[in-house]
Length: 104
Image (cartoon, rainbow, N blue to C red; front, side):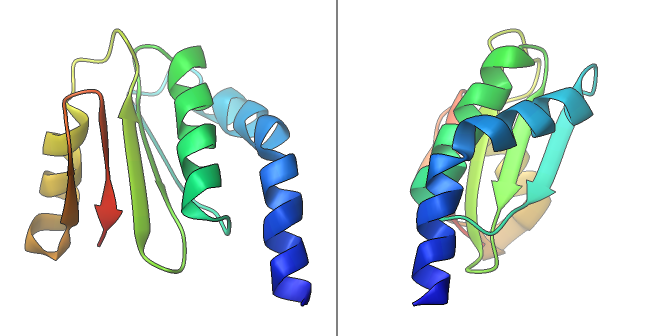
């Protein structure tokens, strides 16, 4: 029950979490964090962070080994290539140059 409430609250606070991560990552080429939220929240947070940090690549994971990676509109890195280079054959999923997700 407590876990379920934490995940629900985390989704509600996705905007605030993305603001904190965006501030922390300002000016960085790679923004990488592990946070305890569901994959849907990882996706929402990564999207917002990539939007605010357009030159960055954003990689978010959780303890379930779910991975979401998004490239900002001006990023020189490809999301799918970055995830594959980071996790190698452990990565099971797919994506494009702009977004990738799966499990690693």
